[in-house]
Image 1: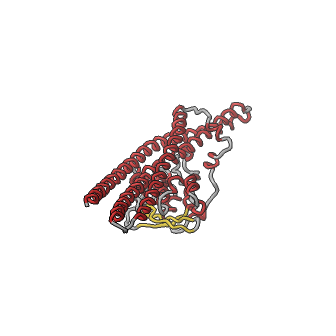
Image 2: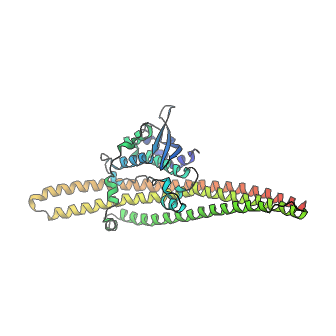
Image 3: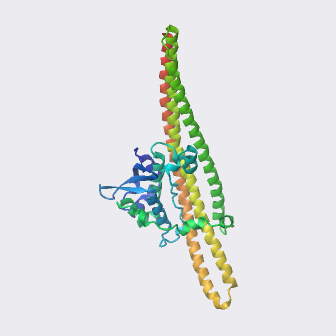
Length: 387
């Protein structure tokens, strides 16, 4: 399976965080790679390789999606981390169930770009990016579960727990009411507005590019059929038929070149800009989750304040203490949230920029290769007509 070193470099763009991150892990965050994947029914098993710190030894562990889900829940449930609800958690890609992806429509609806590509390469790339994002996060990288996930040979998935409060909050019945609740801080009110717009735009952009890739793949398939059908026109009955056959064979070669170009362009779109937009879209949803959790805490604090104001003298002191504790927790979450938002915006700009640069470079190289090949075919056609 191909090595995704370039993607690792893209997601580790903020190297200034590297030293503090790696001090929390027993492996180098930048060395984390998914080197292989095997499929057994609906179960995908990923081979995850990484490099030990300060020594030349490497480590390779095998993990299923359930293990990744265990890691994500472990990150959510760190009760000893102050302001944990203010963190923008790296988004874990949705679970892939190969047996349920028996049609392209279902696969695209469930996984989008991650359903395309050969041998689950796009999906592995997204899972690898997820691990790198967690491992380079200044807070999440300190979670003991991450180190255990990366170095322990035994699968941690047996220790799976229930979904945490962070997930339940985001799925609350009164979610729509809470999402529209006006914030007391203009910074967060503006951020919620920008997040709503960017989430919509990134989703639309991802869907549009996915349509482009699907069309390019269909054109490649049609060119393949056309190229093959031209061979049916070959006939050696007379001189005219022989001449016509030569033209058909040469045209078949040209159409085959067009087919390969469509395939390369589609693959470039998928492996660079496509995955970049997919990541951007999922990260916008992750920020939305964080902002929603903070809004829930704000509503909770406002409720506590009202109760404290209405409390009778015997209970007022207790209610005021509860109010102070709620205010302290809310202020801490808000402080962490602001740091996370700043870090998120800096990171997403760098990541998207690097995906765009790689996309341009790959498409430019493909265009040059195609132009050279078309020049060769043009010269061959000229020679054919000069005979």
